[in-house]
Length: 212
Length: 243
Image (tube, rainbow over all chains, first blue to last red):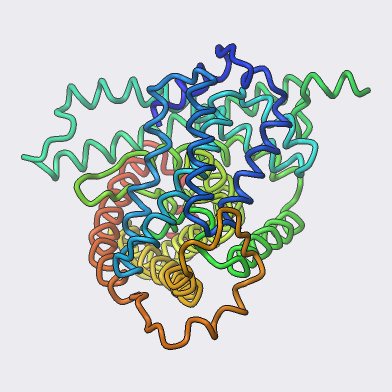
């Protein structure tokens, strides 16, 4: 999750043709990818889809450091394979579906800034939902900052050591407790500043003014 | 462990569509029941707790690939209606990072919010009866996680005929064979092929790992609650009930 800030940086600073494409077009593209993932049961078809997405990933010069993020869901897919009795076809099918879905979504996030994504969502989804989504996303960056500070404090207190698991659990829990309290304090401050700026249940993007 | 870490396209369509429909319906009902002003006021808190859950989900406890959910503690702090909205948001964000498919967001929301809502009510109940913070928190977390894990196994179990169909489907059926409407028609072709889907094997792996996770999360939640109780007891809203 620490990669989140890097992902956001890549989305804002990238200059490829995919970065320049409107968010709406890219989101429709992801919907097509998802439709393919849900509807296709053909291994060659899914393989072509995956290879196409990987090609797009590298062609749009998304930093290679982000690529492992697309492989992360394989950990959980492996658990699901137990159901199948280790059937090779099923394993390949599940893996290709996982990889295509995650690569499509990560590609969207790595080439589109989150205000652009939320701006499109705001037109089709209830504003309350989009506002909550936006605040959560914003809060993640605030908490990442707190987490970085906490990690240093945690390190000074011994951090996580397998030799003393109880002490480590206390350290981790205190860090989460600290994160929650700091988060709640920050949310109260955030609400006050939002009220001062005239918040009335939804955020407005630049497009709102242009539409008016 | 109760989060369904399934990719898109593995669960049958009727199942994930139902999950989405129930989640959206629950969201609408909860919004109608809650005052708009109250929801607006608590949106930053909801966002912050949802972000904490997302960060919690990113901390893998090796070697069992378990991550803390923090759903119960969020349920205790947010209350039953806001925790549902928070888990919905959490699942949307997790799905955007490939942590569970986008189509299973609805089902994941139902399972995870069940954990949060149960955690909230069980915590209040055990606190009322036992008046011991640590025990009440541990029992509430352990039971809420256990029940939601069984719910998750139930959801995965509902898709068994679909997995069998995926396994027995003949290969070499062309590159672009769309099969949105074939689920009900293929069963005759599957007769005599024998069942290879083994849910028991899945349960045999998930339950012991899950049990370890319930204990671990129970202990972590207890320690977090104790920490919060020391510094900000007002957040737990326990005073009015203990007197």
